[in-house]
Amino acid sequence: MRTFLARLTGVLVISFALVSAAMADTSATQALAEKLKQYRSYQADFIQIVVDGTGNKVQESRGELKAKRPGLFYWKAETPFAQTIVADGEKVEVYDPDLEQVTIKPMDEQMTSTPALLLSGQVDHLEEAYSVSRPEGASMGEEFILEPKNPDSLFLSLRLRFRDGVLSEMRLRDSLDQVSILSFQDVKVNEPVSNEVFEMDYPDSVDVITSAQ
Image (cartoon, rainbow, N blue to C red):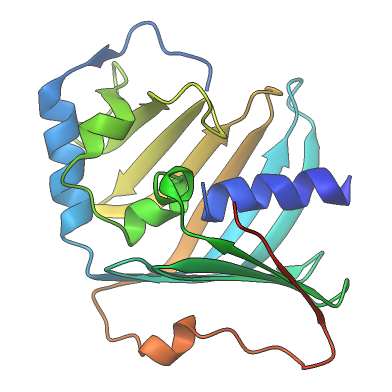
């Protein structure tokens, strides 16, 4: 169970059933890109709930995230399993204190198109990675559905919800029909964030695993 949940969290940080009524169009892509480009930095506390295909809750976790352009990302989950993930634009470090282990991976093309990095990466070419649409009946410009164009993507679809122009929720569906819901609270947009936040700090005694992929 923990292995699956750790993988799902990784998809969210380093990464729905199709809505037939939603119509993908260039204007939706442009509208979303304009919203995200306004975020020079984004900070929030989060609650992450994972539910299975029958709607049963599998896991609930809490923590904080910080994102800063270009390419800087910090994620720290406190409960139920502590985990810290930091991206500095070139590599991603995942620290699991319970396992006394750090995994370091390069920021390859697949990672740069994962959901969390929408808050810290480049969005000028959003249409190259995703088909973007607005679900029918959603408030104007406040909800978007993204479907990856890469068939090897780590997720099937991603729904972004904005409230008063600020990103308030992400809903990600994976190939096992499980949904991870990220709700953001105490959001701070474009407030100063020191680059030191994106430097991983862990004990010298932990095992460090470096991956080429």
